[in-house]
Image (cartoon, rainbow, N blue to C red; front, side, top):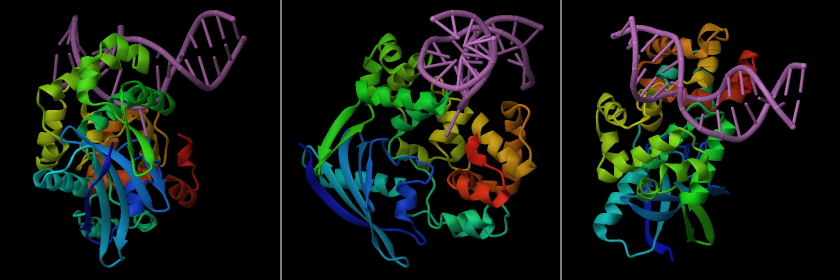
Amino acid sequence: MFTEKHHAEFNAIPPYSFELTVHKPAGWSWSTPNEIFENGVLWTTARLNSCLYGLRLRAGGNSRKPTVICTFFSRTPMHTQEKESVTSTVKRALGLEEDLSEFYAMAKKDNILRQTVEDLFGMRTLDWPDLFPALILAVTLQMASMKRSNQMMDLLIENFGEKVSFDGKTIAHWPSPKRIAEATVKDLADKAKLGYRAKNLNSIAKTLCEGFPSADNLSRMESDEAKKQLMTLRGIGIYSAEIVNPGPGFPLDVWSAKIFSILFLAKEPDSPRDAIPELKRIAEERWGKWRGDAFVYVLNDLPRISKRIGFDLTRF
DNA sequence: GCGTCCAGGTCTACC
DNA sequence: GGTAGACCTGGACGC
């Protein structure tokens, strides 16, 4: 039984939009696809240091002094050190201490971003509480339509995940690396329809169980070093590493390559895959170290950008 | 109903 | 070091 074990209020560097950060317009979840966002409150689950927690999060403070109020639910009593550790992970994943002022100053001079940063004022981009779910997402996105990726993720959670009941809610959470490492490749392929990805995910899970830097550790590394570490995992290439550890990366795939080709070059690419290196170069030249943030802002504002440029970017 | 093609990449063998 | 081809499989599409 998960009961309330720890309660805290965290300060955020303004501007900070709790809602846009945890409940993104493009539909990306903060920790698990099954989390519940109602009336400004997020009920979600996270596996931190191999322990599962229920979390209830909501905005506090005001626009000049924003805060996030967080309640942790756990099976067992939480020790002081455990409280400090999970608190620090949650603060990082909420982007509370991220200062957007330099990004916004750059964006105000950029035709594509100027209005977008106003549309999504105060949104933090993407920082995973836990590493394995991010790797599952990256692997299931490969060579599949969004519908099929969602099917694989849903089946993984249904067949190998865990349910957490707390605060009157029940939320199904991602499987642990241990559970996927212990499953057979055949079982993963059959039950989660992973196809060739089953072998990769099983290998990744085993590597994580043997010892691999956590999401917290990776976030403290230089971006290139973190990317290098991630790319040692089987089935994780440049795109997947940048999805998992966004930083200043620009994780273009054939879908987003079509969108950025329209925005940068005003044309659809003949071959989106072949256009990726050139589009990445343009993004780096145009947005520099802020290209990762620009990437997330643009992809979360497609309906409004489409209206402004008179081209439907949501049809890709 | 059936065949074909392709999808929000990565790895490997071969040059 | 650069690159063609293989990789699972569900769903869309044409016939």
